[in-house]
Image 1: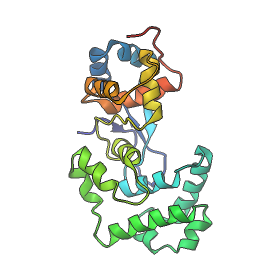
Image 2: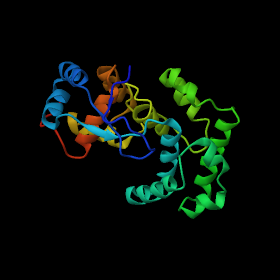
Image 3: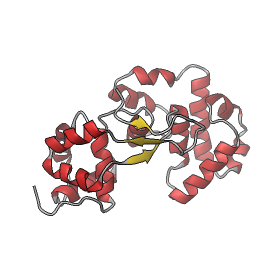
Length: 222
């Protein structure tokens, strides 16, 4: 079952939908890890913007690569203004039209190739929802422009999988280091936290991002 609840049911491929952390998951993490539990109590419930449609979310992720948040929002708004963010429409949209909204030629290629693979049936994006996390990541990373981190973010914010804790995410690693007062975070240590937070690594991720941003900080090493 998804770990997050949609905060609204309307959908227009924008960032005007939200996901919210659940009370049961917050309580479980608090019992499992006292230090994280204290941070959760200080921070309170969290919600983050999300796109439930996986193709729209994938396109949004590609649009945002290596640009500022402000530029990302502006270009995404122009992409949406072209019409519904669907594989059929983007596969049929001329490349010059997509470049005209501010996308680089590289990103246009990524988006159009993904759309074309979905339209011609060589990539089953709808079928991903029935697959385990590792297989979803493996399949998404066969698409040009989608790496492991991007696939994990799609797992968390589009498919709403409950146990996503990305080692490739700097904010998550920073949050762990701040919370437990570590100077570094080798993969072996990170995996210990992953096991500790499982099966609610996704909820932990949201709080670790908040901690990395300055909220709910711990006061001593543990």
